[in-house]
Image (cartoon, rainbow, N blue to C red):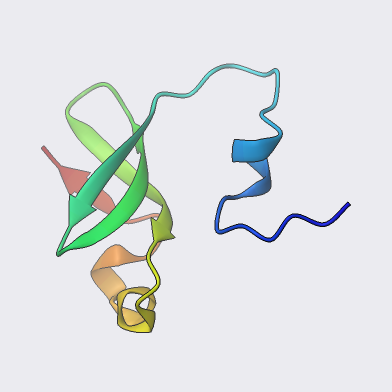
Length: 68
C-alpha cells in the first residue's frame, strides 16, 4: 500500500522505543515539527510546508536548534 502524505513514516507507524516529546511550532510563518529536549531548547525534526522557499531557508533545516 502506498501513502501519499507529507508526514514521515514514523508519524504513521510509530516505533515502540522510548517516546520522544514531539511538538509543533511556527517559525517564520512556517510549521515545523520539533523534538523538545526538556531544557527549553527544541531541535527541528521536519519542515511541514508547501512553500519551497521554506525548505531552502538554512534556519529551518532539520537539526537546527530553537530557543524558547
